[in-house]
Image 1 (spheres, rainbow, N blue to C red):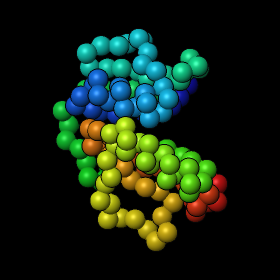
Image 2 (cartoon, rainbow, N blue to C red; image 1 turned 60 degrees about the vertical axis):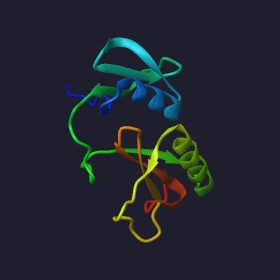
Image 3 (cartoon, rainbow, N blue to C red; image 1 turned 135 degrees about the vertical axis):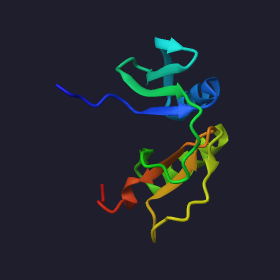
Image 4 (spheres, rainbow, N blue to C red; image 1 turned 180 degrees about the vertical axis):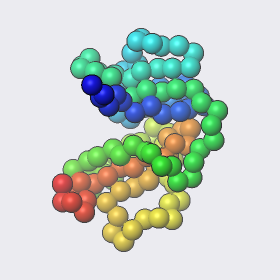
Length: 127
C-alpha cells in the first residue's frame, strides 16, 4: 500500500540546514541513513521521522511548486514565530503574490528555500 513519507528539502549547506531546521521545528538529527549528503530530522520524543535534508546543487525556485506550511494559532504567535525564525537565520522574501489580508508570511531558510508561517485564525477556512 502506497503511503506518504515525509518532505525532503534540497540544501547546499547540509550542516547549516540541520542547525536551522532542528532549531526552527524543535527536532533532532537522527542517525538513520545519515551520510555526507543526507540527514533525517526526527521528533525530539522519537515518535517518527519529520523532515529529510538532502544535499542539492539545484537552483532555488522563486515560486516553488511545493513548499512547507508551518502553522500557528494566532496573529500574535505568527509574529513571534516569524521573529524567532528570522533570528535563527530565515530571511524575509519579497513576495509579490500576497492576496488581500494574507494569513501567511513567506520566509526563506538559510539556503533560500521558501516556506510559509500560516496564522490559522486568519485562514480562509477558519481552521
